[in-house]
Amino acid sequence: MLTTGSFFELADFPERALFVDCPHVWDPLKKLKEYVRDNTAPCFQHVCIHDGVPLDSPYVWYNGKLRNARECVITYGDTTKGELRVWENGQYLNGASVIMAGAVMVGRNIKIGQGVLIEPGAMIKSPAIIGDHTEIRQGAYLRGYTLVGHRCVVGHTTEVKHSVFLNDAKAGHFAYLGDSILGNRVNLGAGTKCANLRFIPGNVTIRTSIKKIDTGLRKFGAILGDDCQTGCNSVTSPGTILGPKSLVLPGVTTTSGLHPRKSVLR
Image (cartoon, rainbow, N blue to C red; front, side, top):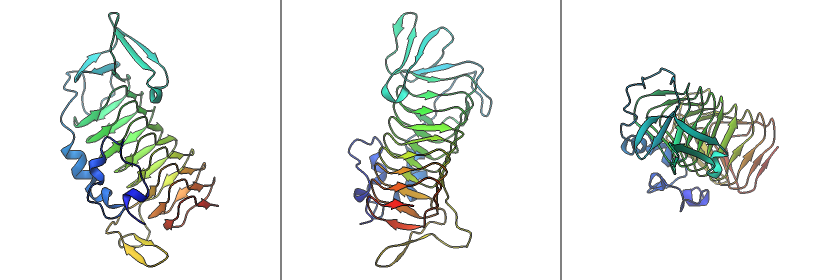
């Protein structure tokens, strides 16, 4: 009932090894720091990139090398549909990623896939993994130990801390995710907040119909199974677990604990 397989389809997720040997659906969060550290390596070794300093020029990441994009022609189509395209001296750079001027990097252990777009004002702290055709929008803040799959969106002024996005998960506008996992095709309405710390001391516990379970986590936000959606300005309380295809209506604050598949929280 609380296994990862009950919430997520992982066959196409590029970092599915994170979920191996995890008896409970929240256990990948306990492994996330070590996993991201072990699966990133120093990159972006370029004289013009300095920790915490906004880029003064756009750059292209292609075939493991960073190059200045001022001489490139870039078509900014829908990133998540593979429509970000880059040409250099008339040559099409298939799979090239674009880091726009004004983006900020802190640390070098940032793994970026193919066809990724990082917009101005985004801040990414190392270590982080960003999958293919993902869009990191203007003002997004990735605080480190973040793992983002393919075709995802980390939106405008969205803050992500120690969390996982499975493929096609989207947090497009004004969201906060702390110590959380978004399943495949999850969509967060604007202003959704996944709170991760209780007011009272102690680990987060999960209520089920049978018993309470100590997660062993002091900080634990939300688990949203595949195809869940939240309405605008909704809040998930620490330790909220939504079964696949569940809905949180606009302006609702969820109760912590397990909510079964296809729940509608009003």
